[in-house]
Amino acid sequence: MQKKILLLGSGELGKEFVIAAQRIGQKVIAVDSYENAPAMQVAHGFEVINMLDGAELDRIVAKHNPDFIVPEIEAIRTERFYEYEKQGITVVPSAKAANFTMNRKAIRDLAAKELGLRTANYRYATTKDELEKAVTEVGMPCVVKPLMSSSGKGQSTIKTQDDIEKAWKYAVEGSRGDIIEVIVEAFVNFNSEITLLTVTQNNHPTLFCAPIGHRQERGDYQESWQPARVSQKDIEEAQDMARKVTESLGGAGLFGVEFFLTDEGVYFSELSPRPHDTGMVTLAGTQNFNEFELHLRAILSLPIAEITLEKVGASAVLLASENSKNPTYNGIEKVAGLVKTDFRIFGKPTSRPYRRMGVILSNDTIETPVEEVVERAKKTATLVTIKS
Image (cartoon, rainbow, N blue to C red; front, side, top):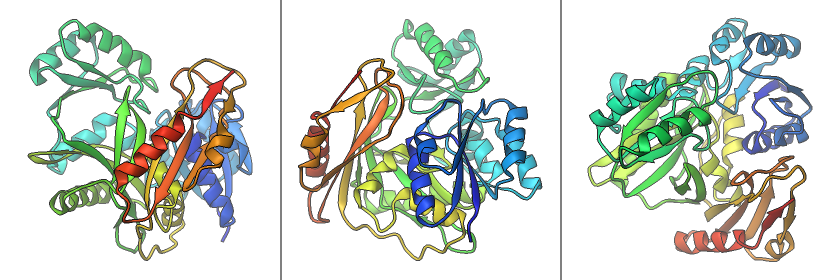
């Protein structure tokens, strides 16, 4: 039953995926643009390449001849995936899903124009002048994001005319890949935002995890919790939207589908065709399978009978505060001595301000108010300092 998996991107999410794969006897080759990336530390082998170089990508695929190609990041020459599928390699969840979701333009147009899902009013811009025009059309405040980026890089909010030039420069700097284009979204007056982890299976029904709430700063998540408080009406609407968009993209695997919850109903926001950073809360034992195990089992066509909520949980990120080539962690022994609390250190070889280096995990019984568990995780995160 052992399959060979080529993991494209080797960050902390990839590391947990590799650990899940190792536990059930799969072989993983981890790929990234730098040595000693987190997933490389636990994989069977690794490759260091620029994944935006199509020839290099072709070379690595031919060298390893994997059964599965599993993307973990955006900065990949994803149009090559269609060719790999023709060669009989399974791209996860599918070549179409990877191509559409690695570029915000494709997934937004699919959701809004083809599937008719409720989204924020939006425009695209490839120059600062086009950005100014787009801002005029959608109105202020509005949010600007590069079409290709991750973890909130390049994302900012425009509130005044003076913000436009800064937003353009920041978006260009935060762009991944070679596409210099941004999406400009009207600001949605939302009450909360959630991630709905959606598992598509081969020959089995689509399953949903309990909704995950999260708080963001600088476009990146700071805490996440499960379950989020969502009305039955809103959860049914979100599940319906998630089912439509994942069925349209095809393939098997776990998708992180993001939504805004508003007084007018649910708005589709974004989608990732892989485990989601906010879903790290599932490492706190909130479910019978964490998100990485679900992704792997769906990929391997191992039937998942059900996803059950076992505990209330929360995650809080550990951020670096300075540049370092040898980061060290102080305060871990304090965390280790706390009840219903755990931690993960990702093993990133270098740090920079605001880089996510680890995560605190807390859980409690189903009856416990989720706010209490979130507060515990946040307070615990302050016990850890990351220094050079």
